[in-house]
Amino acid sequence: MHLHFCFEGVPTEKTPAAMLKYYRQRKGLTTRQLAESIGVVPATVLMYEREQFPIPYQTAVAMAEVLEIDRNLLFDEFAQFMDYPYSDRLREVRKAHRLNQATFAEKAGISLSIYSKWEGGSRQPSRKMYEQLVTTYPEINI
Image (cartoon, rainbow, N blue to C red; front, side, top):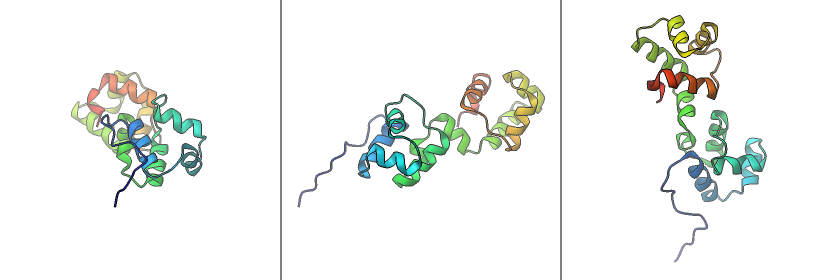
């Protein structure tokens, strides 16, 4: 018996975009089918697969569930940070630097009120704010 698979082999470059395309094809889903199952337009899925936009954390989680794969396959550095959970990671890095919240936030150019909400878990940092944190504290990357 011969089996023929209509999808490409496992990508050599294991980027979230490449993994998304591979596992979507492996599952036999069109971009439209995947998009409809997670509530986005098909063009959005194509943009994720072409690395034109990073896959947002919640979207990566939803797609991984539909594709029945480990969500870490679709995570970039920001999504890994968000999944860690981010509030614990911020606290760990801040304590490793032996700084209080005010000093830690000030060095990164972030207001104390916003930073304390992140560390408390009541508010999530944006991708842009994450990048600002990583510029000052590279070890935040998971």
